[in-house]
Image 1: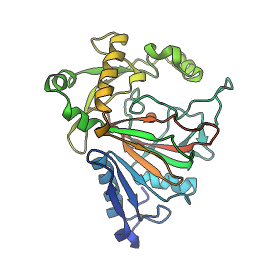
Image 2 (image 1 turned 30 degrees about the vertical axis):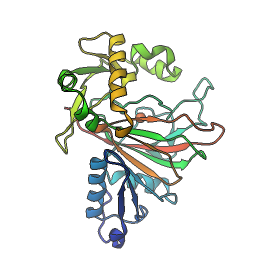
Image 3 (image 1 turned 90 degrees about the vertical axis):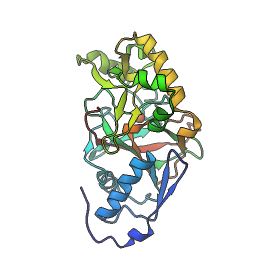
Image 4 (image 1 turned 120 degrees about the vertical axis):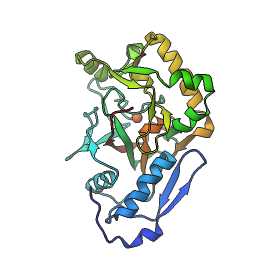
Length: 293
Ligand SMILES: [Fe+2]
């Protein structure tokens, strides 16, 4: 933690809600300067309340300062995709549309265009995913986030009761998705002898005690009691329900935005809808989370 006392401009910090269910924009803070404990808590609480928070105007940060900003939200963990990292900063991975995979094809890193929450195949997946915009296209390339707690609460009673006790088996990539995977990820998957990680389909947020729908469809081998194919269809239906417009916010980046999303109560996806001859480069950091319950 880099909490240090004596930050004068706490009173200039402004947090503006984007819409009822999701999103808030923060201005009036310079993350290159020390952040006091009260401000740090305000930011943390704002992420939990609004599911996604965007801190604007941080384009001047060095990678070390970006990392320190990330550490305000907890202990950083390594990304499971470790092929693209910021030099000298192994806890910052790079999502770069100009990167190439080992076969020379575009790497597709950071282009997960299906709704998901991160790293569900890990026993302790991240609690927060943070994205810092280094280069952005003129338009498009948004990160979309939905509030899967509000979506859970809005489900029909019978469906909510049905899914609440369900468990998922998570792997690097589900067999139902094999055909369309990145060759590097596929190689890793085939080399792995790890048994699937069992997770709740509905998890309880450790800070609020509220439940949220929580899954990564491409990493879900199956919902226990269903076949892999049934699982994909079931999760698609659930995705459609969770990602209705009132639950979602699509953030189109400005350079210097730091986006923080609460993975415990959201799904997110990357936008492909931009001119791919333009550079889109985001730094990504993950904050270690608890065992989902
Ligand atoms: Fe993601």
